[in-house]
Image (cartoon, rainbow, N blue to C red; front, side, top):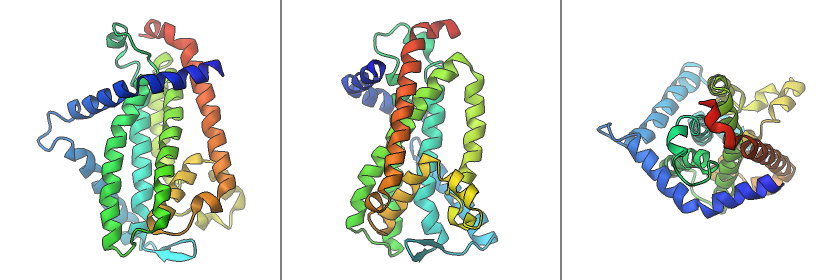
Length: 273
């Protein structure tokens, strides 16, 4: 627990530094592009159109039922995919954040635990921008903002907390063993298809064991929460409070594991170069 509280304190004490470095990271990574940061918004939108064309048009995907209401596939797809894009990009960035900058960081005086957070925070700016675009699309599609939309603040925090806990573990393991980063990339690409992003898990109702196993993925809680918030389908937090307890239990365990691993190995990170 001592490692856990120290890690959280480092994030709080260096929040200003995280915010500044994340914005610098975002700008510098796009400085050679004519459209600059705009590409960070265009890429996810292009992928959404491709997945909609493949799964919603060529495969004639029927509307998806959410809280008893049939939702057009493209409307159902958008926010779920945005959750996945943030988690995927932020996790990949966090996993390589320490070892890719270790020589530079060894000459600076601030805790290494903030570096994965910098990589994640830089993607949060893009995520919020994409949510703004999605909000406008939903208004034109007839899914107007409702009181249920306030849940989105909670679920953004859930997504960030889960990604940080996951990224902290992966950044430590990737620094020790480089293969972890490559393995993570492959696993996350596969995870897109089993996280309820491209197709509803309800179609596995006839296979209860598989359905129950996939529901162990904490990210599904966040994805469904985003959809309820944008679609105005109800108070997901209240209706699925048991799932919420499970989610935060997993996040807490991951944070404890990540903080212990990070504190144990970070003094020797330079030895793994």
